Image (cartoon, rainbow, N blue to C red; front, side):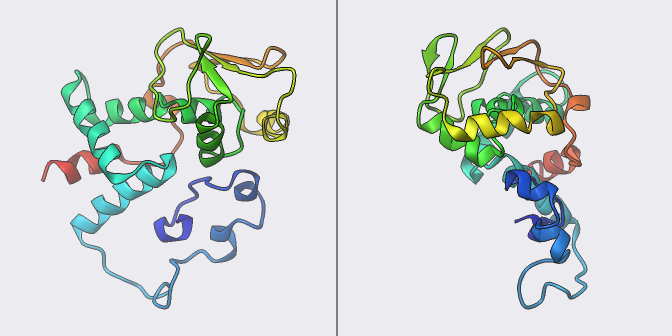
Length: 198
């Protein structure tokens, strides 16, 4: 997917930071015609931008469209609203707190019930966290290996300013919602708004 989008989406955790990254090894699109130069239409540019964001967060098409409609109904800039909604997903928050090495691993851990929000076990990756929510690892006595390993690697990635992490208690808190400056993905959200506004 990274090769298709021509951008590092960090889908494979540590592998994306090493020289084993697929985009580092072969920096062109996959397939027989991947190395050919192709003229991309305006529609194609907007479609690729939407697909980059969708693949980054691991969201299906119908769900992504619902997020866009929700962002469009809110006050403010639609593109920024969309990014904030995607950042509020529980699987993304677990990834940002460093409890998982990738969003797909975070999604699996949430689905298996390893996390609670405000002392209530939540196994829905698309659950939207709110201000002040506390995210906990459920069974702290027997913490599973992936959570331990990802906690060791948190120094490299860091925790965003809008989240607060207590590593001793294996607990995180939502201090505020993400702002556009906190989101480091090289995404032009205005192109996505134009894609859906055609």
